[in-house]
Image 1 (cartoon, helix red, strand yellow):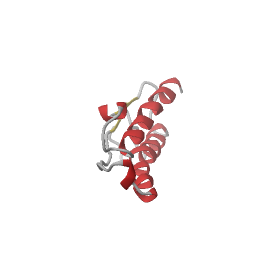
Image 2 (image 1 turned 135 degrees about the vertical axis):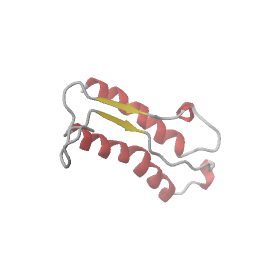
Image 3 (image 1 turned 60 degrees about the horizontal axis):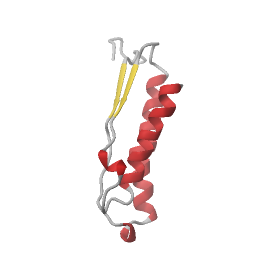
Length: 95
């Protein structure tokens, strides 16, 4: 962030926050799935929207996901949340 206090420009955003839980599909509740998506997917979108509002042309967004998005045992709700992060890259890079 450039100096300038409240409303300063954002030159680079690094989305690296996330939560992890290793539960097999049979044990994942709807609340588990909602929480995973709230942090790993919706958090990324809200943060990105806020940064874009203050990002000049030429700004950069770096999203960090996980190899688990390719599939992983006992991560039934983590895997799709990280796949959604990767899916968002395609959209963000074109818009």
